[in-house]
Length: 371
Image (tube, rainbow, N blue to C red; front, side, top):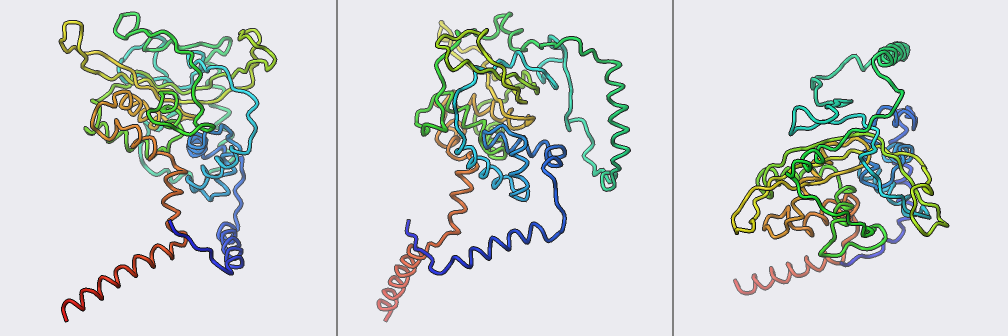
């Protein structure tokens, strides 16, 4: 590509940056970081997921700085993430030990441990609530107090309850194949460039930090027929999982030497995908396979779409584009895709003038032939 430097552009750039600040301040309203964290939960979760940096506070700051632009906020978070030291990696997170806030299954009415609807917009009326225009902080506090009192009357917090996995129930029946744990260390795609063919650990990393809209769109494309058959959501769970790290001076892994450093909220999805496979008699029979999705915060649509694409990319022998790992993984990254599209705004004087010269020469040649 041909680019040329723009001379004398420093003053214009300074003026543009000042104008940007003016556009943010001209309404004479200031939104607090804590306000964004408290009232824009879904947006904060999405920015953290796509930037692969778990920090609600920094995500809220990026949203404020970007004036609500998701792509710009993710860009800011990833840029900041690249400056942070990484002294150690956490131990493998175990979703079975999740402090569940929401847990449902679309495949079974009754599941071990029961279904827990939690907080979701799934059952709300999609009608504008005009009462939000004039919310009263005092009334909000009163509602919160009464809700907590009612909750304490029906809920016991004496012990933590862990919910079993739905897929384990099916494994006990022999409906799912049991595999030995693969403890091969995952490849960190933020430190090593993605290579094709990729490993599943690489694919899952790209999918979980992929642009929510892009992941959802490709998952939807697969559902419509450009990929695997229709899956069933075996389990969706949202909740906090504990994070442990090993002591840096310990060479052997021992749970007693692990240190608890905090918890993160995640959404985990396991989808059940029917697949026809040949048995030992060379006959096709139906089996169930698992598509997996997980992401920061509560973003169930993305996690479900991720589980669909995970299963698609496990069967790359298909000719559908949703089964092509290069097509999927290289087009869902928000920073890469928006950056490449946005680069078209940069000066392309040399390349365009070259094209114009070629067209002019062709036009001139055509006129001479006509004469």
